[in-house]
Image: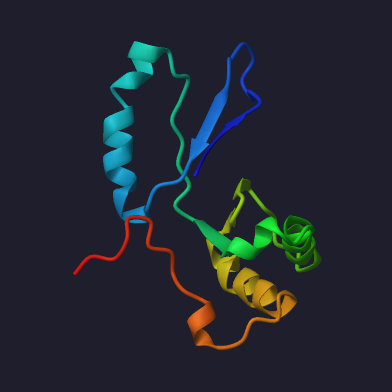
Length: 129
């Protein structure tokens, strides 16, 4: 997930936020640090406590209101959304890591999903043997 935010720092052109797998956090920082002076980046910050929950399905294209249901469900359970990314078949929300299980249960219930096979950890780079 990558998003551009309104700048928080005075005089900044933009703030960028993105997610990487937790195991790649150190490598991402090492890759970005040399760019701080080169590109005039104000600072690099990370938050290892974030988690991501996504709903995925081709049916979202033909069923209006799915995003509203996701946001309402999370809000009703006092789960703050830090970042949102959408596509025609996927809605991903970055939330506090300890709230991911609550978010999954709430969304599972709201969309009346049944069975363990409907909840899976995301494999951002596919499955490797």
